[in-house]
Image (cartoon, rainbow, N blue to C red):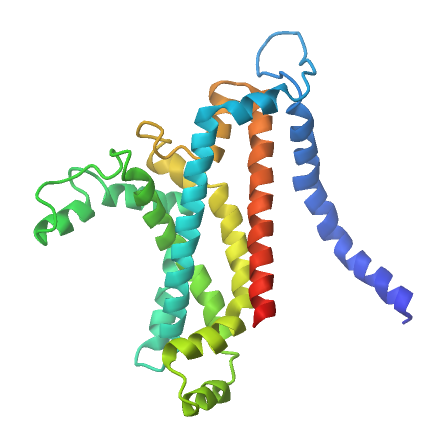
Length: 295
């Protein structure tokens, strides 16, 4: 088959996926983008939406509550994905060692990730319960706290408690990707480095990390996207409270749409969230490429 034929064959194979992506992502995004320039609302009024230009965007960018929600979302994303990366890589390196029961541990560690997000959120909500939660009971019996606490009722703690629940669920995914990459590293590389006197940290920094950085960056980008648009775990555990302490950008958009029925301004918030997500991913991806190039 000629080169042109192969090229057309590739596009034919990709066509179904491209069409599906256009239908479920591109078209809704364009509709949302166009709606963001109107004063559309969900109502029974016969009057249609009016074109108001960038007014929604000016209002969104000057809205202190939306900026605060973006700040909480950035915090959630950085802390959650960062902790998942550290714990996931550490777990992968442990599971890559030879020890009795290793296969069982490899099977068990995937269980948190296999649990649906809603179920995970409900379970952690029970663990955090101020009256009969397992966390209070354990810490009280260990003497680490003098009285039971409302972990999700304290605005200073609630977001961190949600982060903990999110990390518990998602670090196994990173661990499995890192473990698969670790198993492709030739053992001769570490042996040679050990003979030359390189310690464990130096071997990790100069051999292990560069080797697994490629596949690890892919899963971390996916996790960054998911973390930045976090909604379901927030909705189940806290409903954005207390005192808006866990209200993220996606939850803010949800309230604008379905609580206040303002689809025009809600669309502008949604577009801004998508733009910030794209910028963060671009910065992260550029940093990963630079790190890979330096190695």
